[in-house]
Image (cartoon, rainbow, N blue to C red):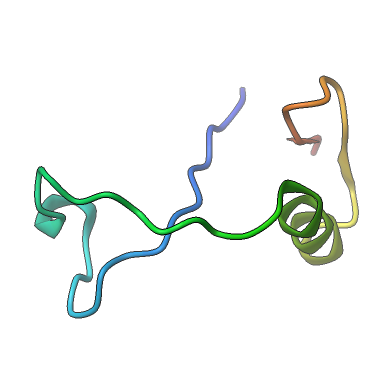
Length: 58
């Protein structure tokens, strides 16, 4: 089994993806390196299987 996780900033006042306006353009999360470092810090068992993906086993 695998899971896909999307990370994005919700607009103020939005608590669900269903509430996001269709024309909403999300703000960048930050630099790719910093985001991957934060994910790795939060989930140390994450490993890189493909350079654009993080894979967490277990």
